[in-house]
Image (cartoon, rainbow, N blue to C red):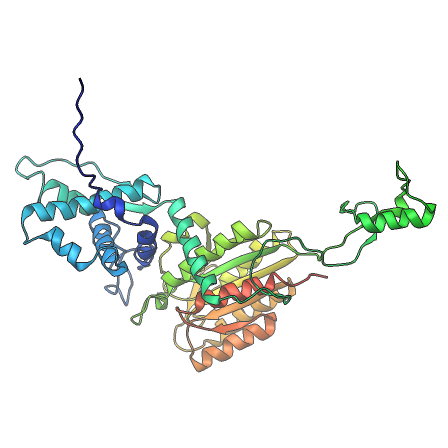
Length: 426
């Protein structure tokens, strides 16, 4: 006879952790933005911030902090795991963090790249100073497409939730809802119309013409009536992100919140407005378009603000797309301080508002206006001269200017985008 021995089920600590809540808490760490090029790369602020630490050791430390801050891992639990500093407690804590990293990798949120290790015969395999401990500092991790998409979704949900909704009514709102719309009256069918038949009006026409309704129904083209609906256009959007040095200087990281909002906007457009397009342009000493999957890894630098070159590139991208509506969403925190000359050289002047740079920037704004492109500026600074410049941009482009901060940036951008989706194009 076969015997079975049963013991009390003891789940692994890592399995009890809400992985999605943990990943949301890690968002700032995973999207942090240092200077592109690494430490000491800036000619004036070289030792101010460097490349973000992408090592496995840094990830584990961030996970530990996130668990404590989220309440999933209380100080009491930490004390119980650590014990009195004995090796067994330390091993349990290390195992917990390893298991969480493995879960994040297995679920497809992260991928891990480990360089080949050459073992030293005099180096222990485990514990502090071991091969395993040294390897954790060398192993690099990156967000996967699934991880980036999840962070965009969570940011979007949090931003829309903070806007708030009341009971259902009849007013137009920027919120999304399911339902069937019937915006206009019926009209007589014309060749090329979508056959969204208004049955009642069609039968009424047949009855008025024949005086009776029998089977089969006597219908002619002149009897057919179709329902009309409000014409809703598609929109092409270029998101311009300022990556000049000021976006992470002065004791505040402004670029990471901007990236989180960009991910949320990308998720919103892809899931709710499939006819729309969004492209991302970074502007600094010059400007370039980046693929959306690389947005999460974008960093600040080079160091000046070539707004004119960013607008020129955005206009070229938008004119290549056949959309009824075209717009630029520009997130910046500084004045234009660079300009691309006809010979390709970059003219730079970060002292005040340079008249030449401002004139060329406003010229590009006017070119966008003539091309039917609206520019909405989200300014993260409030200098008096800068405020006047932004107002001038809005006046020329017939767009809007929002003077905001990193805490309210996402709400302003989503409210503006969703309100524009309620407009009718004549």
